[in-house]
Image (cartoon, rainbow, N blue to C red; front, side):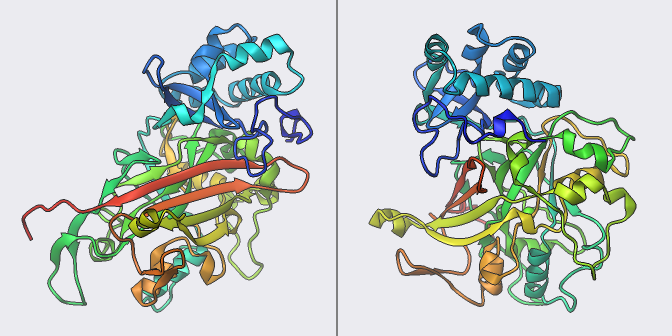
Length: 443
Ligand code: CA
């Protein structure tokens, strides 16, 4: 499935696109929605390259693109990417391939000059929510996370019996999804200090992050018509970084017997740039299921998904406290892992979502669930790193310790793909800061 847009030998004339560690290489071309500083203040679609963003409204009007790429560009220039996502793979590919040519060193000087006229530095772009997310579903697909959390919750068998048979999920809250850089207040709610004690109302005492990725639905599906696994891959537009902020004390009290509610619905952060599945193609890896484990039921089994359904995306989380900022030092990295360790693939998640007849809409967001790797230092949430609060996580930059998040803590997720023989493809970052709880004057 590789093509000329994956060739690392093709360079770009855009400064910075080849710099070591650059996320937004010529081979990436992620899409987002931004407001340009000092120009027409309406949000519009953009493509990031190096430290620049291309204004797609300007590019669409430039006459540089031939059909069908021009039509795709006009739609991608909209104030959300929903309509572009609905267009499907042929349109996504047409725009990517034509923009790749315009930005490659082979483009003539006049073309470069015209494209440069549609660019501005990322530092002068304010990123907005890239999609009008109408439906959000959060999965639970890391076996290591499920075991770690099961232990913290004191379950005799930390892994529930269903985990290895189906991608578990709950329907989340779309209204409280925010773009990276947006702060949120520590939630108030009910929790119990110990078993059988009456609950108390107040600010969350066990505020946590969850290292996740998200993926967006491209063309929607029809109510009553499941999407077979063999067709699921082409329904997915692309991926982002996602932080599913969690109030553990509220969650563990309320989540009996139903799924998460207030413990999860106060804020979910996503990164502003969406990396297309085509850009991620070189980083596909086999979906691996140990021989002793239950094998997927036939509707969750597909040869192509077996061969290349998983994705090797490197992920890391850093925490910057108020003290880090006062000392003017960077945050400390507190965990790192890869998305390849997930027990279920994104295609299996999408098929599971529709198999009972539920329809999908363009721009629907699916969270992959917390991403925890096989070793304790690869855990994707504080509740695991601190063993439910029993062990403090050191922040070497300031000498502070953490069991859960404190007010003023800023959490940043970064993600990228690297493989010998291919260009780096990065997601940028997903950042959010914990603001103090509202004093409601009640208890
Ligand atoms: Ca989650």
